[in-house]
Image 1 (cartoon, rainbow, N blue to C red):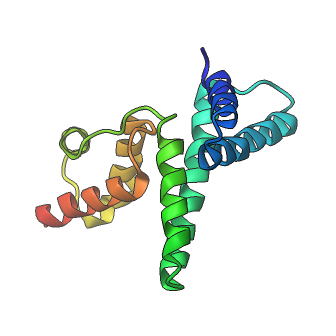
Image 2 (cartoon, one colour):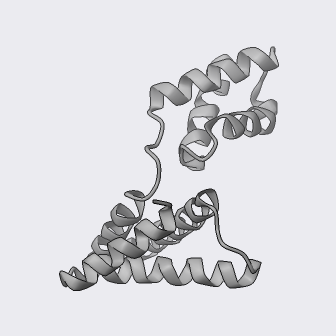
Length: 150
């Protein structure tokens, strides 16, 4: 079953069992997928669906930052629950150790690198992780690795 069909089936199940938060989150992602299909005039592939889900997760993370500034813990909790729901449709993220191995391989491949090569290193690492890790997390790890090298 492809990802879009799985989302639709889970939405129906959540709706029937009155899981309102799950149903509303899946309804929202279904609408985002439908809008993208209309825009592109074609059926979305699983990779495209994953990209849209990641975009929705990023929106929620940004919202959480703003809600925390406004001390709206109720909304922070709601956004975190939605992120958990959306994450269940994405492949498992790489562990820190796996990301470090990839960074080490890239640094070795590129040869002598310094802080000034951050962009090159980051580009290669992001290609290698292929969406299986959050960019901010990878960026932080690359920064640490390059600063440790001097």
